[in-house]
Length: 140
Image 1 (cartoon, helix red, strand yellow):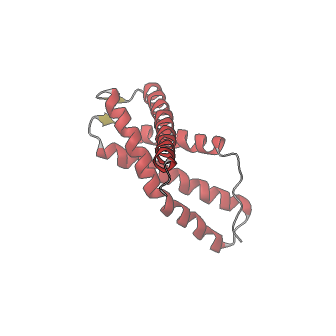
Image 2 (cartoon, one colour; image 1 turned 90 degrees about the vertical axis):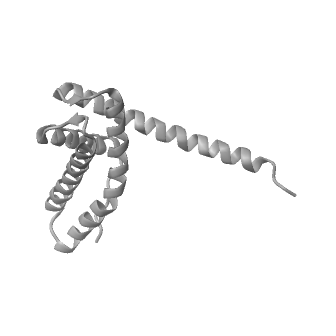
Image 3 (tube, helix red, strand yellow; image 1 turned 45 degrees about the horizontal axis):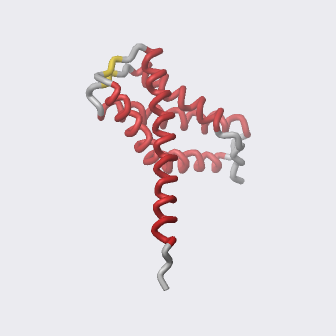
């Protein structure tokens, strides 16, 4: 017997994921527009800022495994807690800057200076630390 609820449940699940992705994209877009407005960034239109947000998310997802691998490699140095947090935070900030820099170079209608790229990276670094409520345990 064929289950009649299968396609309906699948559609609802796809709709949930699409709405969640749209909410994340909207959040990134609002933050980008706010940062660009406060920093005085030149951009062609709001569509380019939306494209910047999409590429920033996609590149961030691509770079995140490398970032995690590099942070995990610091556990072999057997440093104290504070130096480990400093190293991990520096790596996270540099990867966010690399994402902003790469996205800026891919879109020609947005002109970001290095300072503005670092501001974008810093804002998303602070937001990441504020939103993630759980502390990540250090691997032994």
